[in-house]
Length: 394
Image 1 (spheres, rainbow, N blue to C red):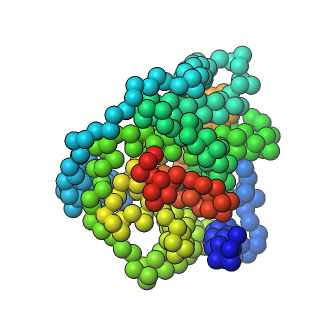
Image 2 (tube, one colour):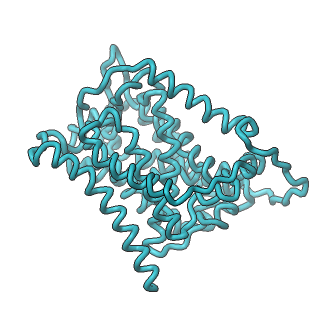
Image 3 (cartoon, rainbow, N blue to C red):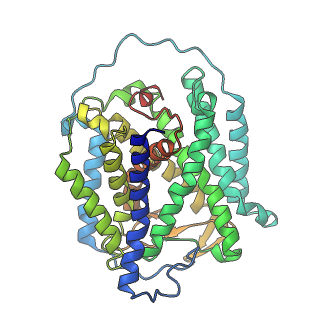
């Protein structure tokens, strides 16, 4: 490793370390070292009380959501140029679905049948159900990509990378479990007390190996549709000035410090601050991220990776919700990792367990997944196709 590379690694690790320190430091000062007894309980079983529904804020966020939908559906209305799809179409050989597609499909259907059938005799299996469900669906998506590209997919050409993404996924998600302590548990696990906390943590970490892979599989699938892939390549060129990048980092750390003081007002920064900090740090080190392409007016990597976890989120929220029965507001589920939400101001209406506007949080989370993997791969010197040139071949 060169001297510059060593400095880059130290800077990234420093940024990551401060991301852990600032929330804890803010809470330590606020509570004068005497933390509430339940603050660091894991898993959270019952959430803290949150601010009540705010119609004005809900309306403002709905307008923002409509603007985002407009960007995706009608990009020319917000400054994108019309893209001409080349007539010369590369011949893609007719390739059958790979074996892992059929294995994944069978496991996925079986997992759904057991999960949604609420079979009491198999309650032990529900400890692992999210692991088999998420990974089997990732195999299905990968198989579809394989067929559409004539034999190229993450699993067929980059199986080592998908393993790396799985390891990165564990830490990438557990960071957010840590942040959740400081916002009074925006998400919680009603069945978390069915097993010991250490056992729950093990199952949670195993399940989280699939959180990022499923996102990258959706991203890969989006890139198999030329019209969709090229739709956002001629957008406005954005270059972020130095002062703005510095401001984003300062605001990111300041918000993480302050979330214990204002957990309701700043809860959304849990999703934005890590993304902003890592994006700026990587950009300063001249490491490509989806934001880098904005300088050339190419918004495709950013918008597609953002959309990847919205797609994944709709799937997993559906599976999660129907793994239980809901009668008169009472949940009954044998899924140990069943999760629910309690967020301030916009906790209604719900689509499955997730508040409707909560799906907006999956947009930055999808980008975070991509940037965290790029960061993780750089730290461990792992070759990745998710780079300036590689993303075009996904």
